[in-house]
Length: 254
Length: 247
Image (cartoon, rainbow over all chains, first blue to last red):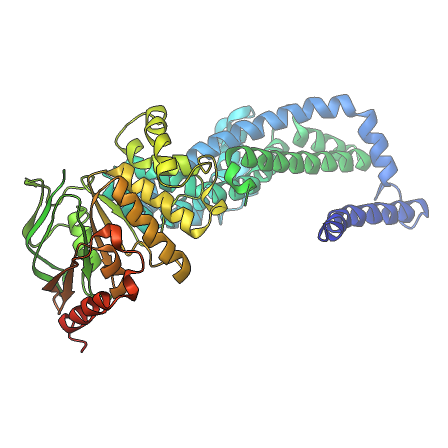
């Protein structure tokens, strides 16, 4: 009971900080310190959000679909990579540095190439998302697999367990906390990846909407879509938390 | 019925001989201890018997059958309880059965009557971290028993427990073994523990390690309560210390 009040405060603090920021922003705009065409006020942004709600939702649906498809494929690729590199030391030694190297290439540099190669449809977008999301998944799963307790593995070997069983009972469940940690990162990468790929070509999606409103200098709508993207990322991260609690019930009782 | 025989066992890592010509026998329903200093090759003997290592020379026979280098034959309990934190106690103890491709349902059914036997009633659905050290150790014993009810290797099974819990666990362990006897070979560097629990004590010493002595503890295991306070106990202790060359 004693610890409850600081807990509530610590939960309210970030919320309060955001509120203060919004109020200051509104005051700055209302007082005319910054011209309206450069920085719309929070109220303007909210109005834009309401007026364009239907359109925004239509585009958001496309972006979310891309992000989820890409993320799912990224998880599959990341899982496969981690599995293979854990199983075959040769692969670990040869492929791991390549994977690290691949992450030094900026996304915005590959995106146009992907559009050039695969057109304006879904494919280049999904590919880009796979490229950005598989990396955290691979690294975290691999480190999870490799850090499995050697004594526990020895115990299972003494029971006559084969490689698959050791993976199933020790390595995989042991890597779950790391996996969910990286999934939280990959979820936001997936949304951002989808938006970036839409900037560079496409017919619908929040990225397309963004480029359109930018060209028409509707900065209120621009901010509305930025907030929408942030909100979507936060919601998805929360969703990962919920799934993690469902999948890992033992953490609950810790 | 289980009888384990180790004949002329030798083992060397690349740079050093660890064991030379180790001979020992574990008769049916016996509790036998291998006593020796840390780093003397005790755990290596167990890894060899459990089939995790292959000996340079020698053979390991279980009921007359050569099991040298094969795992899954004799249950093995390591120093830590090694309960998987993400599995309930129930699902932890049935792990050896699952490894043998017994269905989860059948394994749980097989384990369920043993929870009372091992003093673990009501812990089935709990997670390891919700149990005390002693209870976790009991769960590890139950897992070991479900692995093989015939013969077991225990590597310093009580070393991670505090002194009070250790005494309780010794008594509890002897009680359980009275009800469901398992031929047991265990390792310790604790002389008192060796005398309290064993029918016979093998002394492992030297470099490379070999069996340098054997002491039979005469007192029946049912009369081991307060055994440690008797002169008989001290006599055994003296005898063992002499064999260890510490006196």
